[in-house]
Length: 278
Ligand SMILES: [Zn+2]
Image (cartoon, rainbow, N blue to C red):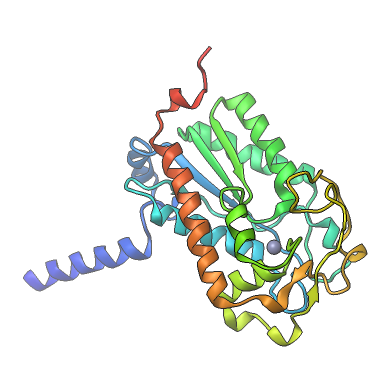
């Protein structure tokens, strides 16, 4: 009898670490009903399945957004924000000249995210943090975020790395390192080295030589281009400089900064987030 009780306690503890109570999809409806009384914040990871050069897997943006959302929630204080199931696909038409890329339209993605956001609001979520792993999803996610805010009047934000971009650029030596280069090679080496083929990593550093077209310039404008016009391999940056050690440092910074942001939003009363104040 006593042994049975101990076994039940151990099983419950194992389940708690295997299925943490902030993972939306593995909760039961009565559990989520209770938890929604104490947590009003949810993170929605958005990724892409698209070419990442000849040396990285197609799922970098999807895997990384999901990994980061879970780590960010883990780093937050209790009660932790909910983590929603990730959206795997994104707007990747510009990589379509490279096989493996799966692209959905801006309309499809924005409608999908809008529906999820409205459903979140219906469930009682008041603060939705869209954690975006793919830069070119950004205009579409912002469009959806505005429509969710317009119709549901909840707080919605989109983050594509701005909370730590500046810190990452300080860590690397490559200019315009925007895709499958020093940053993404490092972050993937840190988490899944078995999926990285460094023998295929090359340097395709972009020399845009124009402060307005430069992707990482503070004076840069938003402009759109098919990757094939800029890069033979699909890499935009210098993949040969990627290391696991740099990647670990990057993850540490990205998770800390984003957790700090989410924690701030979570702890700020909804009325103080400038919603419904008129
Ligand atoms: Zn990527």
